[in-house]
Image 1 (cartoon, one colour):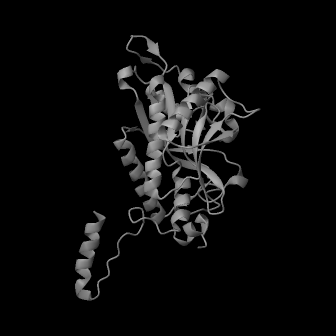
Image 2 (spheres, rainbow, N blue to C red; image 1 turned 30 degrees about the horizontal axis):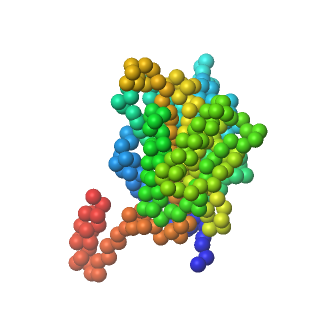
Image 3 (cartoon, helix red, strand yellow; image 1 turned 30 degrees about the vertical axis):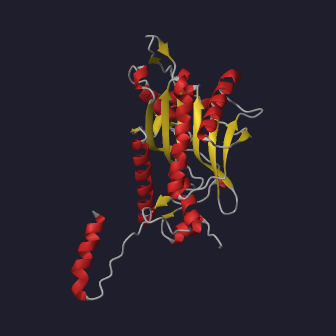
Length: 330
């Protein structure tokens, strides 16, 4: 069967569109596409609630000083939009949600009894992707990310990362997504990375143990790590065989130190938590693009924008048909 690109299907099915007056890499969602997106977001929220996550909201802007503290400004500045002047401050459209969640964690004192603390958000972030790399929903500049950060003790990291991999697998099966491989993304030669080599080796060992505990095979990907730590990337492929990352699990030992995060241990002393990043379905844009192509527009019934049509066969049945349609909308 010949497959059709999600950009054409998205246009033909009136799911999303673009306009040069809005700009490249900034698609808008039409009513049917918004319905699919809403169903997907509600599904993943419910899945996360069941797994013990608490949902939060955070602003898509932050002071430049926030991203200097997190390390994004020095390591990821080329991928960020220019800062906005605001009196004596500079505001930046965030390229990720982790600095905001770190501040939420440190908004009050924490005890070891609260850990692991799982904070999830469907949040907006912005990345200044090169114009030549933009295309449909797969690579955009305004991103709606299914993101979460788990703050835990060092002894809880492997279990939390393995559980996140299990949650990813559960969601993929429900959505009809088949990963092509699991990639252990590691630093590469000449890269600009934060932290000491020993810290990276320890974080990598934790992820390897999580992969083993989850019973998954993996391949190493040198040069694919985040600037602050290694990660497990769940790779998917489009009908042409082009790979991209959808879901991810990361161990971050860098930012808890940068933000001076701590918790009170059983011994009454202050201890440093570990930050586990994870995204179950990745960005809403990319997962919808993939689902359009996987299902060729014929979504599973629970995800389809049109689920019921009432068709009265005579004028006398119009009221009953309208009543049935009204019941279905409730």
